[in-house]
Image (cartoon, rainbow, N blue to C red):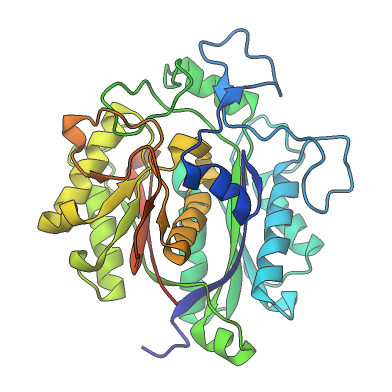
Length: 380
């Protein structure tokens, strides 16, 4: 295949409870430091849990002209877009398509519905077309990146900004609390035998994706290759994952096949890892089904243990964390993983970061309705 269709990443902007930019990731995910704290942006006195990984420095959003208020989803995506294009050295924003993952909600503190948010962002940043919005819950961020890659591969555009943002709000918090899904001990501990559940977290990331040909013409240095990707839907249950992880296993296998590599060449997986018994066990089963005898050679961690679950933005945030792992040769740990569940026997990176050369790394996402996504990153 011509490099007109090969997809590379040339820039990114990232946001989490630890702040904006790559250095903040080394304060949190890569240090194994959880970002959970008592939520103060709304009253949690009526809920069973009061913890989330929130960023509460009002007015600290880069480029914000409204220092008296905390950032909105619009602010976060705009700041991440600007950081990504600055890093990529994009000369003409009009050449960039825009694909944004955000929350579909009936009631919202955000002033704009999802589609209008994307259009306003594109106009604000003077971006081009196509413009797309993804709202399919926890796979939305990964699906936005995949859609942008498909636009580039098909020749519909040479470059795109793709990703998303989520800020913990009362509506999402109340839904998870009502479902008894939130960890009342204030810790999100994927794959641990004593895990109590998930916790939410602020997060966002936007990536500049472009054809390898476009990057070469611009003399831009790629940060990484988006070597493979896949989306699947096992349609097993409205909320529960398939016990054998069949959809996730298929996504893993298809993304490796797209890249033309075998399981023996995969070095690291950033797991979806929500800290819930059903998800963790299904994901571990999926990895074994897809990787076979190579499973025990592949390092696995779950960075939601530090950032919390950023819902629609999680796939984009974790894609950037995975990219940084490839570039830095540092693997972020699963914080709080002390006693691994026997149902989740994997080569865990637990508690502390680990140095390791990474040729290929994968970020996994799963969502309600049986949705699954895999993003495979390789060195430039």
